[in-house]
Length: 562
Image 1 (cartoon, rainbow, N blue to C red):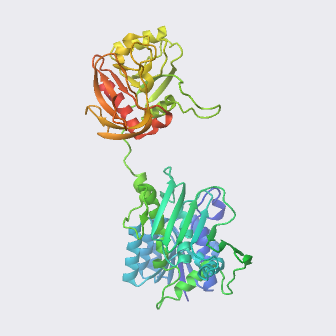
Image 2 (image 1 turned 90 degrees about the vertical axis):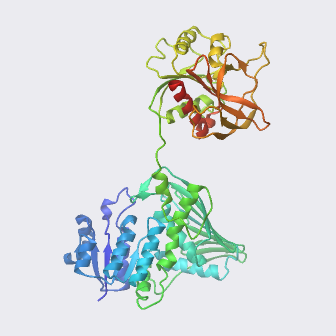
Image 3 (image 1 turned 120 degrees about the vertical axis):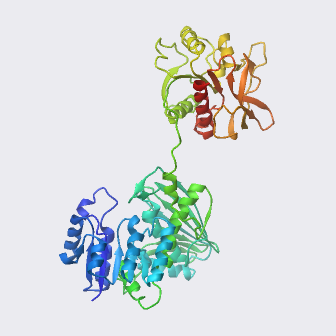
């Protein structure tokens, strides 16, 4: 009598509501074994007693053939075959354990492994123990896909073939799209030469490992053959795989829908021997006991899992990744376990700003720099209290405040501003003047001295300042300005020119425009060292740049530690 163990019975259907995890996979394996080999002895393994009992009842498995662990199973019996239906982190360890225990036929659910190093470990172990290992990409046996492969090979859609495959319902690459990777490999008789991908990643985990939220992946198979995979959208068209060529298009389903230069036709796919995809997989695997390679052999199907890690590596590095992979780690785990950016202790910041250049229409998010500045300060871990610079300040505005940040161009100085801001600056408390803040209070001469350099408005004795919108190269002049770079590039921003001189300054950063014009872009006021000026930040989006946030962080720190 043949025997097979189902390792990992999973959650019963009534406990699956709202979950993407359950016992559907194990059900498919048990049903497949029984259809392929009526009368086969099934063993069940699961550490959860409730799940184990429910699975055993479903398939009429005697209690003595149920085990709480693989150790207990192999101590009692070595089955002919085993299906690894546990979470992905256990796939390779349990498959290797089965190889070493003497199981000769092993099917491992997808994704095969948690990194490509594990794949190599399993392949090596299976070879040394003489074990046949298959990956559960059972769709290779389903009649529509068999028929589609034949149509492609026969030239039904011509040459220059592009496969487009989609997965919706918020699924991820490893959990689902690996099936479509494998199907493209099946249609093209081998894996691609390279993968290029972009992903939306928010740190999500599923089945205990890192996953992305959505992705788009391009795979180049050479010889004018390509594939595009889209994963994640909740809503999808009513098809999963489309094949396009120079002669036509095919939507894979049952029936297969085929549009060509000869017209439209539908092809009903059938296979008289087909009972279930899993049954076909197990029968095929069993036939290789004395030699041969099954359609889902690990050599054929492992590349689908490797493609997932190539896609993640491509997204991580923003580069095309060639196959076979030369990196054996899981890229999303690298991303999720990256050291956290060191933040300074949180501070209470009073932001005195106005709404100049607020271009947003009704209902839109403002694009003015004050919004980006506030977002940047909060991203650095600080608590921000916003004060509208066009209004009078309440008497207690700066109570319990650590740093004052100025970002406005109000030309008329209000009494409350003179009193509160003047007292704050003169007392030596930390002040950061950001971008347009050097144009504030032109009627207040003391303030112009406190800022060192200032914006010259029209109508004064000096020629007015101006600001071309250009990119610039930033270079650090003073190592006390603690940014993680000595030079950096800033995309298009207002680069100030012809600033007035209110008092002596100590240059911290210089900006060089494309025409070679230089301008001090960050400075400390010599007579008022508690005042640090950091100029970048014309629009909201500029404050999202790491370079700008680095400078803002350094300015705050220097205003305190001067």
